[in-house]
Length: 227
Ligand code: SF4
Image (cartoon, rainbow, N blue to C red; front, side):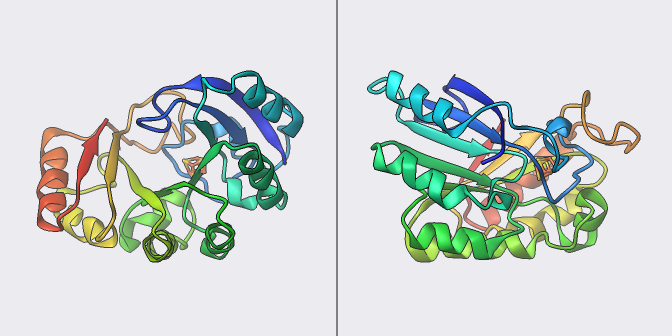
């Protein structure tokens, strides 16, 4: 595993649980709003070993519920299945954050019982996702990941960072449709500063956009959490 950082304890990365957070290096998207630009390059990282993560979990046994693996994009790591198995063997739960571009990897992890909670990013509608992420993989891959979690009965959430003007109030109903059936649609407000593309013109979502998200969630029967 190419790990770039380790947060020993978090109360917010896995709501309802106390978890350590391991950050993988490298991502296959280049989201203009990314707040972890240092984790996007495939090269670099290597600042934390698997052994350090496992030692931390052991040292905090009884005080930590599990481990959140985030990135970067964790599914790019060839060693991810073996690493998660080592965490699970020690009795710790695993939450996996993914950008939804590699459903085939997610499928294998879920089939092996290595993920207790899947958080999948839903970036934007097809019309907007390519500009926002630099890839055409969204949102179809995210939908596939969600369907895999639903089929396996794995706890999950779909996450969207809302930013203006790429997210438009009139497109929120379509976006919510990609999340239909999800246990939770977690919306995070974009906050400018330190993000990947400071020239993108992205701004925090306004009241109209947030209201459109609430309306769309209600129309699609989605539980909504706005942060
Ligand atoms: S926000 Fe986008 S570019 Fe940044 S780590 Fe997540 S998926 Fe990768």
